[in-house]
Image 1: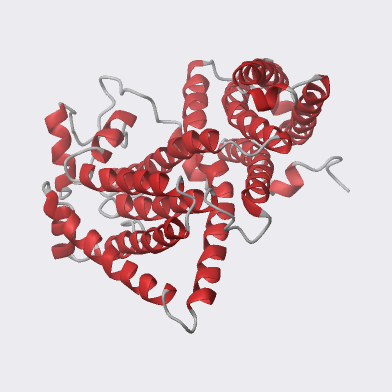
Image 2: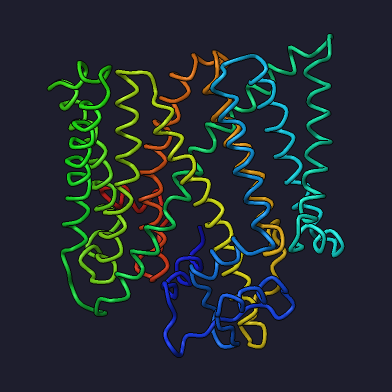
Length: 428
């Protein structure tokens, strides 16, 4: 995350003011579809609202691809319930094949003909990604059914899904910051400059405690409806829950206080830090609760399935938001002395949806694959689930600190490195 990202995010709100106008590249025909949704497009600002991004994601040019994603996930979910060898083979073949199909569709979108075909408003937009997906899937089918190296190939692809599943936990913690960060920035914009406030201290201290209490209520509700958990839900379980949340909260607050020092009382910094903590701790407490639950019971695939869907939609939104807002800023600065050049990265507004679908197909397939029969090579679904939630918790604490660090550096309040900022004392 760059400093400029934090600065530019300060302009984000749900709806622009009357003098806050949207700019979008003139040659992007996709944005013309937004006019059908009565979204006004002018040429004075870098603002791209959340409604506009969602309208783009579910426009006629992208809707069919999103439907393909959910069709595949539904298919993987249905076959995974059979717990059969055929199910694992199908998820391996079509999971990797479809992911690569959309990945190469995204890469080929640099060609005008491919872009026009894959982003048309009809079912013909699916011709290229589905064709590529079937081609890659046929390669995986042939490899898995080869008498010489079929078993080794299956073992290699299984490890690949485990790797994807584990790495995604880091990404999940990172992308989950987006909605809470935008809420915190809006709260930050409402407070007066150059004043003091204790809201940052209060909310950073209370957030883990509030979500700890909510967690206890959730556990009580689960124990009343799941007989297998009733016997395990006792005073020892509650004690472990309190200790886990208290430890995480104490460690986070210690490093956060070292980083902020006196700036934690700055009204702007306090509002951002406090409200971001209040929201983000809900995400951390969910994973802490599921992690503790899985220590006493088999991991609940239902809980992870619901959150998997939320995460997939959030990643698609977050990737699209970063690309669209970045390109809108570049278009806004192009006639000025501050022009920073045309975006030349891997992702653009034309292919970001295809990259997003490629990544999320791989992640969804890895979830359903590991939820089938004993396919995991590292201790079964129990071991994978517990490791995944531990990674999310550690990554989440790190993300919370990084978000606050970027705010401080973005406002010019500190200039030292991240590691140095959380050290105490400062000069040893």
